[in-house]
Amino acid sequence: MATPEEFEAAAARAQQLPTKPNNMVLLQLYALYKQASEGDVTGDRPGGFDFKGIAKYDAWAGLNGKSQDDARQEYVDLINSLFQGA
Image 1 (cartoon, rainbow, N blue to C red):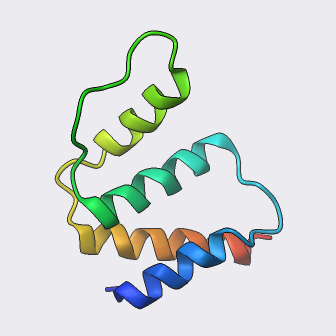
Image 2 (cartoon, rainbow, N blue to C red):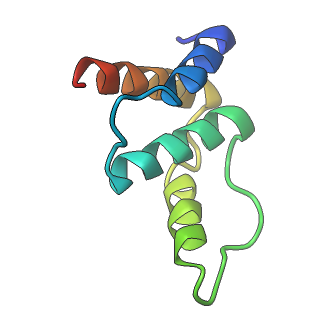
């Protein structure tokens, strides 16, 4: 399992990606980060024409039940894979 320090280092490293990942990867990064740092999604799903907010909410909600430790490890692994593929 990734330590909290490894997770924070990966989060900082994410800001240094040489190329911007596609939207699906960005949503996955967002959802894993939120799940790892806050746990299951809370609050109401955005409505109306907030398509970006809806997509982010749905991506995070898709991880409901995943432990924060597992999400933290998956986030670190995903960041590492993005640097290897760059």
